[in-house]
Image (cartoon, rainbow, N blue to C red; front, top):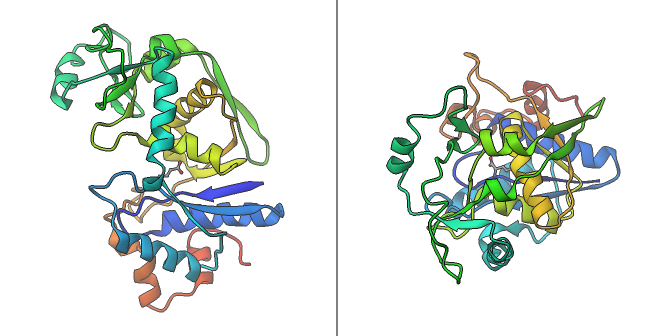
Length: 278
Ligand code: GLU
């Protein structure tokens, strides 16, 4: 078993991150497997080296260890580009120059009964899909042509009793739509990078928060389109604050470094998030 923790260095790690990382670490250890770390730093406007340092520091303090070197997404842009080219060559991508506002306006009158929002926000109304496509893949925002790309997909959601989760190609079209696979400013996207990196690292079990479960059908579809294996998924409960809200990066009150400063021990953190003592 190979598991991973894949934080974005855009803020402090909070209790929710600690839970996710420790769970993935515990699972790999219990199975005699390997826990890997990956830094998801494709968003150059928000990622900071100081946050990355703090992540290493907090995770080591929690008692986690991982093989070096750590994979960093910012060093893998050519790999992402190559995969985009593969999809482009199959006619599965189209350039899009819609602004957020354009999408909002065009999507403001959805068909009756059709969902307006997918895992990436408003479902794309298709404005640029039928425009002529250039021969050479341009360096702009690229969307997946879901009408052509969609197929029935399924994956195993692990746990005590594993379940098969299925999504039909019709649902991919109606509830997810033409997701962005390359943003103009970063040349890739979370969805594309996560899929390529999980495959490159040989991840067998993806352990992450339940908030990412609705993006998983996109990931499984991309694995199929790019001939990559589909790992097992374990979407875990989210750690919430006293008011029941899920924790966010800006929620500095729950930051691990704050608890450390106040004298908490790693065992205290495990207890706070409901993990058994080690
Ligand atoms: N980098 C993502 C985050 O920090 C996690 C990606 C994943 O686990 O698939 O939310």
